[in-house]
Amino acid sequence: MRKGPANLITDVEGLLVGNVSDARLKSGVSVLTAERPFIAAVHVMGGAPGTRETDLVAPDRLVQKVDALVLSGGSAFGLEAAGGVAQALRAAGRGFPAGGYRVPIVPAAILFDLSNGGAQDWAENPWHRMGAEAFSAAGRDFALGSEGAGTGAMVRGLKGGLGSASAVLDTGHKVGALAAVNAMGAVTVGDGPHFWAAPWELEDEFGGLGLPAAFPATECPLPGKGAGRATTIAIVATDAALDQAQLARLAVAAHDGMARAIVPSHSLLDGDLVFAASTGARPLGDTVADPFMLGHAAASCLARAIARGVHAASPAAEDLLPCWQARFGQGR
Image (cartoon, rainbow, N blue to C red; front, side):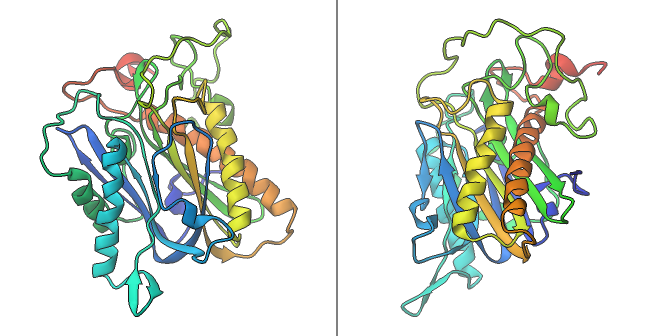
């Protein structure tokens, strides 16, 4: 398994990502879309999720494909971002055919970033606008760190961020991950710079520091945020021809990557969620071995994406926490 050429989720051909950030609000939106509808599924393991249309992507539902997936800040207000994306899709003539109309299918998940130092004096919901703008900005290349849904994200002791990573399997299948990292837990070990995800790092993509020589005490610290003020939301994607049931299992497997990169993760106070998506471009060779390896690759990619998002975060006015680069990056 090796990195894709851009080390982004868009190494899965056909997928596009758009980011929009509001520096004053300290929030933003990230949209994954494609030129054609794609199959999607979801798995939630956190105790405090915020979602839209996730019931629709279960294997026993009528609609099997979606037009876009949305990751947004803004807590419940951020769910309006999906409305902005749906509006832009409608203008483009996209959507599920129903009763003579086209109805865009846009599942979404949100994280809590309202108390991060950003201005919350808005009178009209800004995430709807940002959703439409993020969809319009979608392309193959996009920035990481304090961008999109990761703009105002925080983890224990550090700024969070938007991360992505990709992998190419020996079978030729591609897997990618996109994560907005806003966790209750820690992404780094103790008070040092080392990332919990280090065993899965490829080619020094988040500093190449490895793991520390010694680990701190294993007892879990008290929560550093209040209830409902966390959540890591992510998308894993592949070009493998998986159906919705197989994608649901891919999302389950990908959660292992979240647990490898964030300690602790999946708490009652987090809304941790993973979408899985497939373009279906490359058939499976072995219907047992290939999905097995795809699950491993999805977990590894998500762990790497989480670390990359925190590693790439940048400082901004009114920040409540330092970014990794400001605290540890000098001379490394």
